[in-house]
Each structure stands twice: as structure tokens, then as C-alpha cells.
Length: 230
Image 1 (cartoon, one colour):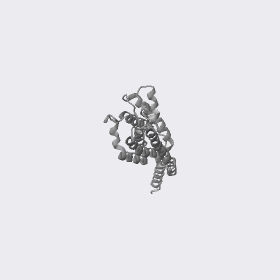
Image 2 (tube, rainbow, N blue to C red):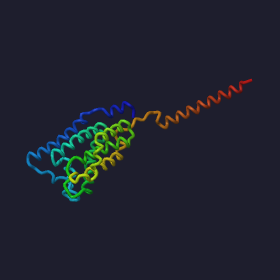
Image 3 (tube, rainbow, N blue to C red):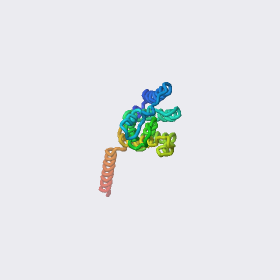
Image 4 (cartoon, helix red, strand yellow):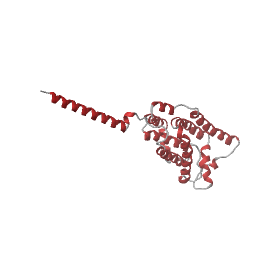
């Protein structure tokens, strides 16, 4: 990859802002509908190890217990989605879709018997993916992004542990683990570190050949000079 390809790869596109914005707004619209029409969507969350509970794998990210729960998820969700779509645009939808399904399914397998709701599983999925993906790729720009994510949301790591009974730490843990797995699976997809010509083995071989030829020429010159000496 050269500098031109890098700039093209990280070129801004409307989807970088549009999709995260629409996604977060959809969560608020659904919450408004639930409150305004006195509905109860919690029953559509992930209920572990039951057939009907599987519907929550898809539906649970759109359901929140209250405005505080929704607000706490909205800001990191918007920031991390924007980060994902800017730096990992080619694989962003795969990470989001497959990651949401897999982390939801893992929650369904390991969680306590309760309705697990909220988009926090996706937040942990994105946090983990962005964090480890930059480190695994050994790409300076993406490592810097990883460090920023740690600075902003590093304290989230504590909530993959059973600290509070009312928090679905199982969903957090599932999203976090799936994010790590996806960082490895997609490590060769999307942005890659810039590799210069002088880093290639072929280039090193050419340099070695040139050095050897130069040494042979110097040896020939020395031999000629020694023969010309009276």
C-alpha cells in the first residue's frame, strides 16, 4: 500500500456519520414508541436457553429499560460506530451484523435466566474490535485509534465482570470476546500497514547483489593495481 492508497482508504464518506446517526436515532424512536403507547418490550429480550428467547438475539439491541440506560449506550455507540465505518469501512457491516448475532447467541448460551436487553453488547463488540484490531495489524494509525478508545472507554472493562446484579455482564462479556475473535478473523481485511519497497525481501536481495558486485569490482581493481606495481 502506498500513501495515495492510504488516503483513498481513509477518505470520508457520508455513511461514516449517516449510519451511526440513523442507528442511534432508531433506538430512541423505538423507546419513544414503547413509552408513548405504554408498551412493554422487555419480554422480547434474550432469554437464555429457550426457543422464544432466541428472538432477542436480533431484537434485544433495540430495547432499553429506561432513558438512562438508552442514553448511556447512545454516545459510545455513535462514537464507536463512526470509528468502525471510517477506519474499517470495507468490513464494517460484516463486523456489526455477524458480531451482533454471534455475541447475542453467546449471551443466550451463558447468561442468567432473565431478559437481557440493550445495545451494550454491541458497544462492547465495537470497543473490543477497534481496540485489538489496531494492535494486531501493527498499523501505527490504527494503534493510535486503539489508544484513544482505551482512554475514552477503558473503564468499561470492569463491566464484563458481575459487579452489579442489574447489569447484563454476560452480554458485555459476549460482545467483548466476539470483538477479539473478529479482530483476528478480519486482521487481513481492510486497512493494512504501509509497506515500502525497501522492506521487501526482493529489494533486500537486490541490495545484496549490488553490494556483492561492488565488492567484486573493488577486488578486481585491487588486483589490477597490484599487478601494475613495478
